[in-house]
Length: 115
Length: 116
Image (cartoon, rainbow over all chains, first blue to last red; front, side, top):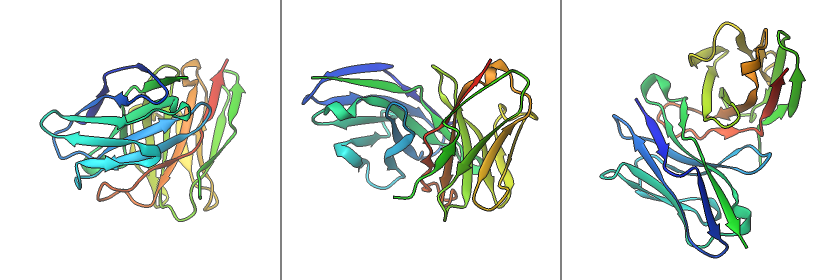
């Protein structure tokens, strides 16, 4: 069965410094992986997705993630944090076979950005 | 940019009452979903819907839950007799397709349900 583990429940960075949000996945098959972001009182917005094409995936707002099969990781990074990046971030894997419509969410990582 | 809209944004109800949460998916999308997030817990899949029938449901989606697309635009989630543990944020989502594993899900802003 597919699953994702977000290694940090809360990450705090200073504005202008790099962001690293960690995610490990478990999958019996080649996974489809996503990062979603949720700003306060807003819906879930797709940041980026990996679907077995390039292993380095670029998303919106300067975020990117690298799929590393050997490490079963899909960490989210950004070179320089902005105050508007403060939000909750979810690593997500798509279910397989008959469960392709079923997204399996990690517990989320809350990102705080200090001025 | 097209978006998924949900109403109400917040509903407070008494235990045992029926609740209907409404969603308007993106107009050319064919697949519809409900997810929920209990406070402090993971976002969990409830149900997916395609071609006017449920295509998949989780263990959470028991007989007290139902979904329908009554008029070709709205997609509703009904909870027949609410329980305290139904208190959660409910997210509606839609996608163009799901087969092939690349159909992106677009989520609404959520409906917060509080059961007293």
